[in-house]
Image (cartoon, rainbow, N blue to C red; front, side, top):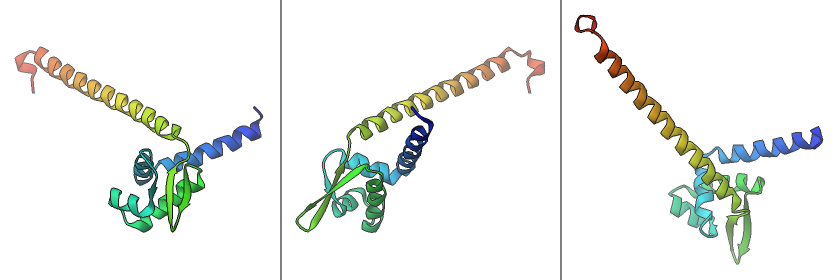
Length: 126
């Protein structure tokens, strides 16, 4: 792959990651994974002001992550590609495993500290 194409791909990757960096946009994407929704439906379901939802949908549309389709006077939004949810789920699994490993390490460290203290002679304990 030539370097210019790779750089363009990395810029697109960066734009998508920035879009995924907002919890509200993640909630919108997960809500749209079930079925298409209008802005008002999303606002009601996610308990967000309608202008906030519209702002986040605009960003997601600019990144080609959601599609907009007019149905009469309403615009319905849907996921452009369901693999985005699969990628988010995979990332969530990685985060879960990382948190679990950190918790196990913290538990081990605490137990090790307790054991070290218990191994000290009584006159050396603080």
